[in-house]
Figure 1 (tube, helix red, strand yellow):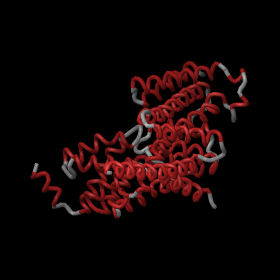
Figure 2 (cartoon, rainbow over the protein chains, first blue to last red):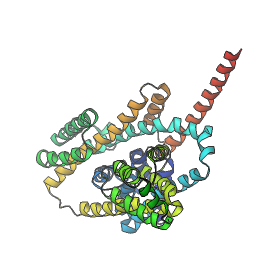
Figure 3 (tube, rainbow over the protein chains, first blue to last red):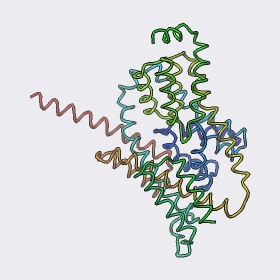
Figure 4 (cartoon, rainbow over the protein chains, first blue to last red):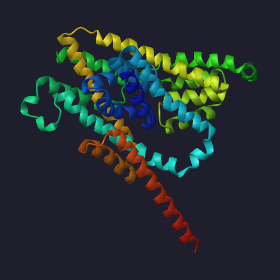
Length: 189
Length: 202
C-alpha cells in the first residue's frame, strides 16, 4: 500500500475511535502514528506545539502535519480527508437515526467507558513523551545520572511551571508556548 | 427581529450555504488553539446577529457534537449546516472549517522545516516541547477533575493509563476495550436498577 493510503487509513481509524475532539486524538496519533508511519516522539511534540498557532480544529491540523512530513503535500491531503471522513459518516448516520441512536444501550455504554479512558490515555501520552522529550531515551531502564543534563533539568522546570500556570491560573496555551520558546532560546541554548 | 428572520427565511439553500461558508471560514480562520475557540464567534454570527438558529438549538448541536467520535468542529459544522441549509449547507460549513486548518498547518509546517539549525532555535524548540508536555498533561487533569467522584471513571482512567504503558496493546485497542467494558458496566447497572425498583414495589 502506498504511503498515501497508509496515511488515509491511519487517520480514518483514529477519527472513528477518538472521543473528546483533537486532544483526545493526541494519544492515538502518538501511538498509532509511531507504529504505522514511524512518527517520532520529537515530531509528535513539535506537532502539538504547532497545532496551537494554526487556525481551526486541532485534529485537522494534526492530520495535515503528519501527512505533510510523512508524505509531502499529497500525503497531507490524504490524511486530512481521512481524518474528516469519520465525522461525516457518523454525523450522517446520527441525522438519519437520531432517536434510536441516543436510546441505544450500546452507545450509552460506549460513552461511559470511553470518555474517562481518554483521560487515562492523556497521562499515558505524557509519561511516554517525558522519556524522549526530556532524556532522549527509549525506555526508563536506560536512565542514568548522566541523563540529567542542565538542559534536561531546565526543560523539566519549564514543564512543571507550565502545568502550574495552565491548571491553576488558566493562562492561554498560546502564550505559554510563546513564553516557552523565548525562555528556551535564552536559557536552554 | 422578525424582519431579520424573514430576510434569511426566503433565501434559497444555495445562498444560505454560501453564507454559512463565509461565517465558518471567518470564525475558523481566527480560532487558534482549536475549533472550540470559534464557538463565541459562531454563536454571535449564527444566533445573535443573523438569527439562523435559536440559542437553544445551537447549544444542543454543541452538546451532540461533543458526545460523538471524530472531530468536534467538523461534527458541529455538519449539524449546523444541515439544520440551516440542508446537505449543501453541511458541505459548505465542513469545507470552511477544514480549509483554514489545512492551509495554516501546511504553511506553518513548511516554515518550521526551513528553520535554521542554530543553538537559539534548538533552545526555543526545547522550550516549546517542554510546554507541550505540560499542555497534554493538563488535558488529562481536566478529565480527571470531571471524574474524581466517580469510582468507575477513575478505574477506567487507570486502566487506559496502565494497559498501553505496561503491555504491548496499542492506544487504539485500549479505547476499543474501554468501550466494551463501558457497555458491560452499563448493562449490568441497568439490570441492578431494574431489580432495585422491582424490590421496592413489593
